[in-house]
Image (tube, rainbow over all chains, first blue to last red):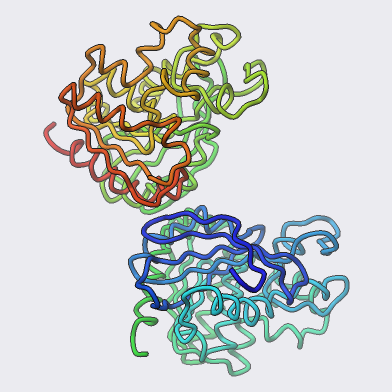
Length: 285
Length: 285
């Protein structure tokens, strides 16, 4: 690999190659690890890219181990990219109490402006600028065909990034996303900690606020388990459904009876989402 | 749950329930943890049981996280049981050097007779006697329809148990199994350590020796990656193919190009194996 990308591991899986890679990120100023699955393909061919953003406490490894995405990606011809959820390593600030919902493993896909997080917590730039360039340079990726999905905090990332770059992503979906971080405890803690107390700075990182402020995409797919312990306090998909209704965004919100917040839920509906993405990635040019 | 079985966790997944359970085992004299997936089913219905035995270093959790068996089990109506690979806990002897291939996480599915392992290392009795009774009592299991499969050391377990109880299992298959422990380093260390140096005592725990000594089943399915680092020294599927040929056992050995020894390999072919099992579990009565 070029661009200083180190191959940590590769293995054949489901008729493709599951790799794990490490590189020094200019955005975060740290070593970053990500996983990339590339289906077998004809020499010279390029494939659409599906971005998967993970939730609180996760690294690239959680979805790589438990996401059950490879079979569908191989069948559908989709590259699947799973970044880490925060910078890590020496000198990277963490939650002062070591809490799981802020700092390490909880970058919330923003570029921090508040001390002491501003130097390294630049996950927005990392995911929206640096990584696409890396994926385009190092993998058989067709960057004219991208889509994005995520889980929980990563669902927040997928929604805000998808709403900000509607021309870039042909499909946006989420599993149990945080839809209104400005209105829920996880999000208020994170946005205040990374961006400061001035709430105007939060709006570009709140899907509901983005829609209120005029961001538009044509459609969304969201799955949400009704046995999810975080549903009422942290996730509030009702707020997303309402905002989309007012904005004319076609939001398919599926309440899945009995499902919780874990990867047992995510993996159950992963292939559904990938098929929905593929239908939008494989049409037109 | 009865029989002193404690529910550690349950969650809905792929239209079924993934549970993790803990109980005090009479066989091993320790607390044992296992995972059980039960597809949704009609009230009062019973389902066939597929036993999955894991490999070196694993607990119940590896296949539960990475095995990608739930979708197929739900579709095919199969209960999937994944025990741990050894006793654990205070007073349980381990490899004197803490090696990964003996002691904790490496019970090799035998009843140990040698000190200091004899008191707790009784995985044969645990898997073949105690657990079937527990599963039959606590889950909607039809014990007249069972099958068994496993990975690596667990493939060894599946083969030896399947060959020993041909009337119990309608299907036996394996991923990258240790087929001839008496002839390879992992197996020689384990069998000597658990059973002593007298090799006559090893034969009931060596699939090749069992077949040589007259054990018969009608057919076997084995998948083996040709990029498996343990293939030539530890696994030797050629020995199984030869023994089956001589014994008239229909052994389908599929060499999978490019696949290694990991769960990326196992998960790729898991659904294939489960369909093969289901075809044999769902016929007749």
